[in-house]
Image (tube, rainbow, N blue to C red; front, top):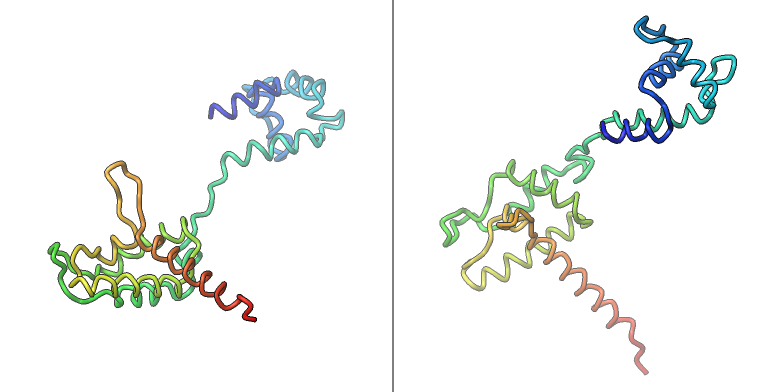
Length: 195
């Protein structure tokens, strides 16, 4: 609301003038509480209206800017973020984890519905595809299987874990980064010329 009033002050426009401009633009009659003749004279003098009571280009731009404050941004759906078969991919991801209880007392696999929120966050913050996610997860689980799954995170906490300062960390993102670095190093090995 502050931004709107600041814009009005900057343009030297009163709320009543804005209301009259709105009514003219939308072909609505002005309420009797507002003296439309005074406001129309003010709008014409400041270049918001021409003598035929048609909005100037300046008016159209200004009204559109103000309208943008009231538009709600469309929230992305899970399909928009993660692809058409995200539910199958989440299930595949979860099944990479062992179906055992970890030493922490929690099961390695988390309920699939709980994972969806974590993956929504992940796809909003990182740009990895499902194939990379599966490979990174397999690498993680394989490493911890050698240690008898000691200190291994659950499938949910591997995606993201909230720290005490309310920030999030993602071991999945770290493993995805490591995979990308490893593959770029392998590409470099094959590009070397052998004489």
